[in-house]
Image (cartoon, rainbow, N blue to C red; front, side, top):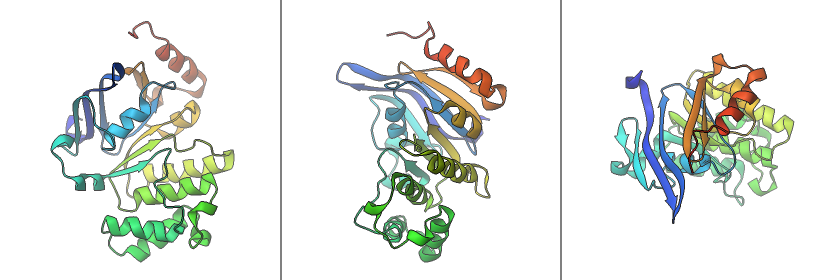
Length: 244
């Protein structure tokens, strides 16, 4: 399986002053795998995803993407990544279509007009394509953010709590879009953080728990049920093996 690793973090640490957020994290993402990353607030999930997304640098440790050490990589390696975070990375004064065209030109996407139309329809925004993003609801912005993230067909998606602040209907729609990405004709390798345990279990192949800046437990999704998931998670978070 090691030959199928597309993203690897080895002994990654991150400190802000004297405060260590990540304390030697090891994580491997296989090609086509969907990992749900769980953990309490302050566990370091967002920090880890920012490092994996090349938006922040680790204090120590190594990251490899498609076998390329990120410390040696050119900026173009970001074309292998699609990132959805608390920030949408959208321009509010541009329309939905204009946002996608801008990013498509940035990544030199072929047949851009057709690709933009395809994705606007895929995330259910074709009727709002020419509306400015500032007039969009949070759910609509997140759907457009997904279209932005997959516009250039990246093999790896990093999703940081993509359903935060969404109502149930919008969250369900987002879940359907993400599941289609994970299992569709062009399956991608995905890491997603979420506080919704059941939703995270339903969508992933493997669950990993980050607590106290360390990976403390993991399991294959097929080995857990919605009934025992909560106990499994809280036992991991409250593990006596956690060290200050």
